[in-house]
Amino acid sequence: MSGYTKEFLGLITKTQMARILTETYAIARNLDLDDAYSRLEIAFRSEQLLSGFQSSIFEGMTRLRPNENIDKLIQRAVKRAGRRKKFRALRIRRKDEGGWAALMIKIEMQAGFSTGEAIGMLDTPEGAALLQRGFNVLGHEIAQILVD
Image 1 (tube, rainbow, N blue to C red):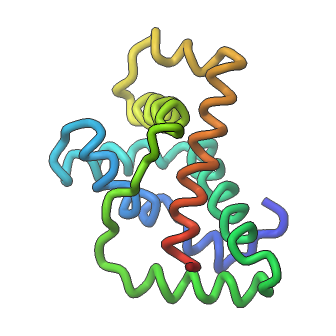
Image 2 (cartoon, rainbow, N blue to C red; image 1 turned 90 degrees about the vertical axis):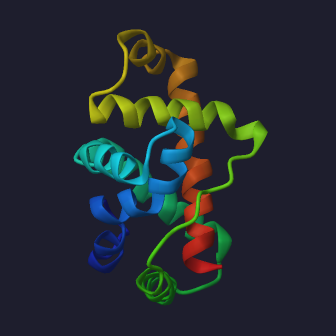
């Protein structure tokens, strides 16, 4: 993960990602917050899932504040994340629902709750593109929380 500092990687951890997405995931899957958090904790054991979010959040932060020094940007994100005890559900726009759905399949797959048919969808070029779109959209939303 070149370009990322240890501080940034320490900010976007498995635990922090589970905290950030718990309410959004609970609403999307009609789960209580404890069940949602437990599933996300399991899902974020996947390095591929975690690094996808780390990359997308980092890109989102640098897109939102292109002229800001990376170290200052990360310091700002660390402060903001440290102040938050709870993260509200992210707003997923209608045009981004396909990407969000693909990302949900990936999370469910990593948590051990996805069906074979759903997993197969991600193996197609269209599914991979939707998954990347999901990472980009959620990365941007999370970056807004952390640096805007």
